[in-house]
Image (cartoon, rainbow, N blue to C red; front, side):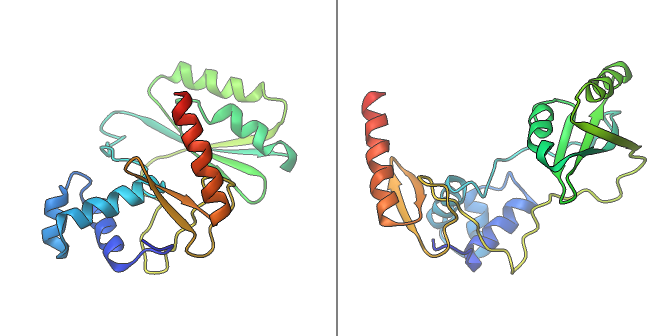
Length: 201
């Protein structure tokens, strides 16, 4: 698989986004390619981190959950620091870093006391200059942020040096998984490092 998604990849991803429980056999018969092709493509897209996992989508309202959008104002130099304090908080369901050095949080809770405690904990973070909260009354549209259109390309980072792979790059298959490297030098160094780690394990 090259650096960009081809039509087969897109078809597979559309099927999986429609039904994450579809079997590779079902997908292959629907899109007209072999089951091993579907399996190999899904494995490759999982290895590169494009497919992040499969989960059941639950109805928050049915669960009696209250959701609040919180806009947090911080200095540009403090964004990373504040983000790191919030990212593991269970109540924070979504977290966006915005271009105007604000953080946007989607917070969901059942227990009002826990929520109040969370807001109090925010006021204790000295880098936060201010915040506004708005309760979500209805969610007429909730879709995954990843929208698969024909313009969608792939931004893969080299597994060794971390730079974006701009052209085809190098794809190594080691122990049944694909590993993506930006050039032959990184591929060689990555393989040596991988082999060394494997020996020591």
